Amino acid sequence: MNVNNQQAQVSSGRARGVHVAVSALLLMCAASAQAGPSEQAKRIYERLVGEEPPANVLASMSATISAACPTGCAPGNAALVTAAQSATQAPDFYNVTVKNMVTPWTNRDQTVFAPLNDYTATVIGMVRDDVPFNTALSADILYTVNSPGLPAVSAANNDHYATAETNGVDLSATLKATTQSQTYGIPTDATAGLITTRGAASAFFINGTNRAMFRFTMINHLCNDMETVMDTTRPTDRIRQDVARSPGGDSRLFLNTCVGCHSGMDPMAQAFAYYNFDTTSNQLVYTAGQVQPKYFINATNFPFGFVTPDNSWSNRWRAGTNIALGWDQSLPGSGVGAKSLGQELAGSDAFAQCQVTKVFQAVCFRAPTSAADMATVGSIKSTFKTGYHLKQVFQLAAAACPGS
Image: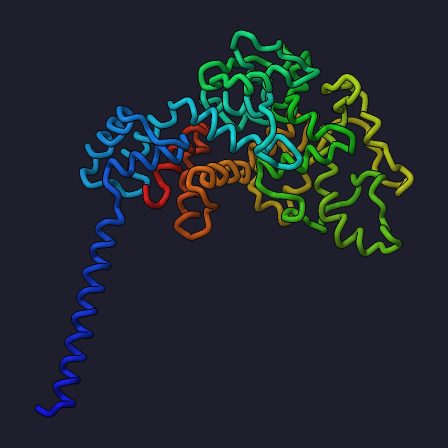
C-alpha cells in the first residue's frame, strides 16, 4: 500500500471516528434533553411562582411526576399539570406572577411599575377563585383587601390598594369578593367588570372621547391594537362629528386610514356614552340616560357626522376582515351599554386566544412563535373555553413549556 493510500485510510478512519463521536454526543444530548422529575418540578414551580420551591413542595411535586414518568414526563403530560396545581397554591403565584402580568393592563404606559389597584386585585381574585374569566368585562364584581389597618375602599382614591401593597399584604389570603354596585354605588346594570373598576376608569375614561377605553380593552383583552383591525370596508354612518372627513384638505386620508378604525370603533365605543372620570371628584361618573359632553367635542370638524343619542352599540366587525376575531354567533352583535359590549368582546375567540397567549408568555418567558407553540396555545385555548378558568391556563402552560 502506498503512502497516499495509507494517508487516505487514516483520514477516513478519523472522519468515521469524529462521526461516531458526534453521533454519540447527539444521542447523549437527546437522552438528557428530557429533564428528570425533580428538575421538571423545580422548573414548573419557578415559572409559576418566580422563586425556588420549598423542599417539601419540591419533594411532593417530584413524587407526583415520578409516579407517572420515572425518568421525567413529556411536555403537557397530566402529571406535570397536577404538579403545577401545587405551585399555583403558593402565595407569590398571586402576589408576584399574576400581579405583574396584569398591572400593565391598568395604565396607558403599559408599565408594571404602577401601584396595585382594584383592576389588578379583581383579576387576581378571579384567578384565585376560578371565577369564569369570560365575565371579566361584564360582571358586577370587585375584590377588596380584607386586612387590618388599611384605609377604607373609596371610589375617590386608590389608598386602600396602594397601602395594602406598601404593607406587603398577602393578596392570596386577604382578597375578598364583593360588587362594584355595593362598594362604589354604581347601578348594577352599569357595571362592566374590569371596564368599570376605578383603575380602568382613571386611566381610560379620563378626558378624551372614551375611545381610549375601547382601544385599551382591545389591546389588553383581544391582543389587537387598532392598526391590526383596520377595515375600510365598513359603513361610515356612525363615525362621530369630531373626525374630520378631509384631514389636511385630503379626503383620501379619511377614506383610506381614518375609516379603517373609526367605522368599527365608534359604533362600539358608543356603549360608554354615559361614563366619565371626573378629575374634580376623582372618581367614575355614570349619567344614566344622558350622553357625556365629551361625545360632542369638536363637532364642527364635520357637522354632518354622527351625533351620539344614547349608549346603544353595534359591532360592524361581525362582517368584513374582522370576522376572523371569532365572534360568538349566539350573541346578537348589538346592545345597550358597557355590560353587553363586554359580553360581546369576551365572547370572541380572540379574547380566549389573547388570555392564553399572555399566560404562555408570562410562564414560558417568551411569546409563542413556532408551529409547535401555536398548537400548544390552540390546545390550551380549547380547554380554557370549556370553563374560562384562567388559573388552569397557567397550570397547562407551565406543564407544556419546552423543557418542562
